[in-house]
Image (tube, rainbow, N blue to C red; front, side):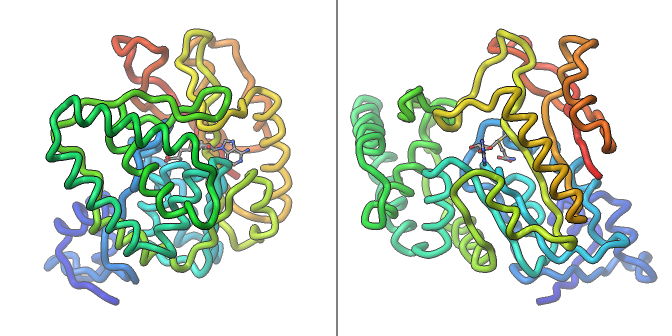
Length: 334
Ligand SMILES: C[S@@+](CC[C@H](N)C(=O)[O-])C[C@H]1O[C@@H](n2cnc3c(N)ncnc32)[C@H](O)[C@@H]1O
């Protein structure tokens, strides 16, 4: 479907710069009517808030995309997708022939799969939860929140529980403290309730748009290495692994009960080498250890074959909110 919209509208709607909008305007620059091709005709947003989510640096990441470049990139792959800040941004603007998203977090991937396949039942359940939650008082909310959390932690994920578990997962993400997904060493979700007046538990418009957009995507639960079968020379791959902690006091975020330590970062770098040999284009992001120790060259050495950019982002260096500030993030690409 094609839309005719003004430059100003495009800047806001597609989250693109004035310059890019002008380039797209081409010869029509003066009357600023441009055409944006988009099959979904909607701006998509992550349906969960996710620790390490890349909402803040999406613009920078987008600039590095080799789209419209010399290569014919027809496939998009994000094998550690989390909340998918870049993925949804890309889906709103570009059409890829094939898409692959994956993550090792089974509950997260179940939610993606249920949105793809069972959107009506999911929306019905979330709408019920929202109506009920908005009506009850603080004590009632606490009782309800902790009973959903208990149920979520004690029910195993299988075909018959998939829709309920996806609804509980989204409910907990929308109502928990800071919208943070964190599990203990037994893999149990352990975040306390947050204090929101009217949390939007059922954003049905976005969920429906995400549902449509996911019809074309392969969704895989498991290690990023499973994506190798999908990747070829026409694929753009974005890797966003768990951050390497910036300091010993950095708040450690556990998305699963497995830890992503330095050996895991080295294993990922080997995988990146393999897909580079295949001829795929990639971007990988991580925290810059030089923020706290200028002599720490861990990533500079690990990715010395590739281009390494440092961009500024605001993030907490350690658990104290007062230490939130501008720090560098690494963007590595081939
Ligand atoms: C920094 S987060 C990604 C955030 C995402 N870019 C966003 O915008 O929300 C890292 C993700 O990697 C996933 N992960 C950790 N180890 C993994 C592995 N071995 N294979 C695939 N995914 C993994 C985590 O579950 C988490 O969702």
